[in-house]
Length: 352
Image (cartoon, rainbow, N blue to C red; front, side, top):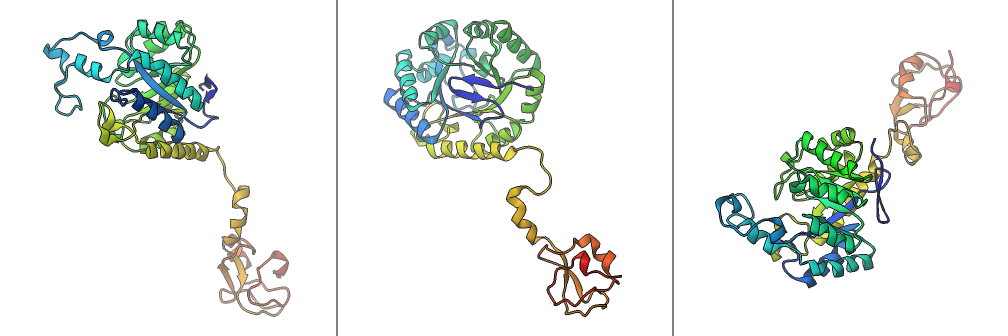
């Protein structure tokens, strides 16, 4: 089930290594030079794509300090900030998009974005981005999904917090809008997320339910969840990415650093290669190891006609004699010719 998707020159599907997306998000910390350096570092680490977010504080919310517009959660990285203040600080200036996209293209990696309203879609279409991502918080924004689907570009939708019914609505809206290349991402919308709350077994269930490619938007620390997701069939892995967590920033606490991103690419690639196919028996690479199995060996010099006993016949390494399962069969039988200690027992050496 599921069918592969093309995003630019990258193929997304189980016949390919997982597509690794480095999420820039707010880690530019208000500096275009830093944003460019993050693109450079992502490419050097082996990421296949850099993802942006396209919004302004005014396209996201209104400037208000009323209680529902202020984050009041002591466990939140953004406790005490108003939504407007947060988005004003985190947004990527729209005039930076073009140079960032061009920088990614120079490295040969993809660059696309998450639009948060229709004006962002129009802007990104002018930049000819190769795909779109719908953030978890926007999965219920069906008019936005319809607008993106109508571009005909591949569409990645994060499913954090979404019920099956909400995912069904989003998928139906995307497909009815003209989207033929769809990827769903399992996501836990906490920042950071915990492994305990990741529920990665949802990945094959999503694939079966919606017959599309499925990946993971991973907000956990470390690489374990991403590697496990690949083992469960994830074909896309998205991780927030920064140059150095110690530099701070809205998303820095749950972002990978360059060496970690390099390891993510390496280990998810290994996990994908390790999947292989259902296989039993000795493969070519194991053939030499058959010698280290146990088998039946003569352990004393014997004359023709002597009886095979536990004292002169043992199950030992190497594996060039009869298989151990024949031990009871040959005990009590005679040896058919003279043999020396260390001879592998073969059927032609066994008499009556």
